[in-house]
Amino acid sequence: MIIYNVTVNIENDVKDEWLNWMKTVHIPDVMATGFFLENKICKVLVDEEQGTTFSIQYTAANMEDLKEYQRTHAPRLQKEHNDKYASKTVAFRTLLEVL
Image (cartoon, rainbow, N blue to C red; front, side, top):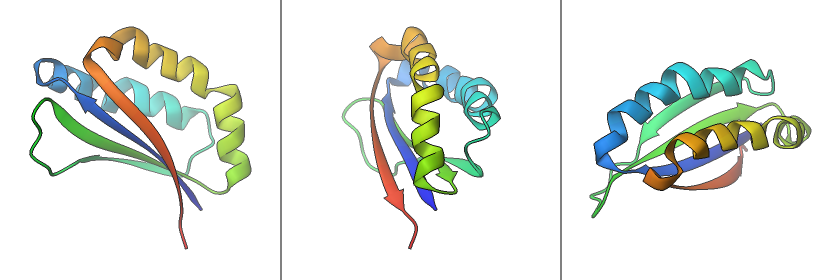
């Protein structure tokens, strides 16, 4: 299994709105693509100078599913996120293999 991890630092003035949007809109939209088995959102427990950091993890059955998601759905979904919150977030993505 592959974990597609998206780490996001969000400014505190929009944190609650962003978290609600992630839980009610964005994550359900990602899951509706059918390429992921499960998801979770975690708060990163560190003291931040600015904002709050979250880790959003999506589990795919294999690398082929993840690559197909990235090819067919990720650009649109990332654009929706960026259109709404780009000036308030910094994000990076990592891939993890479950051993």
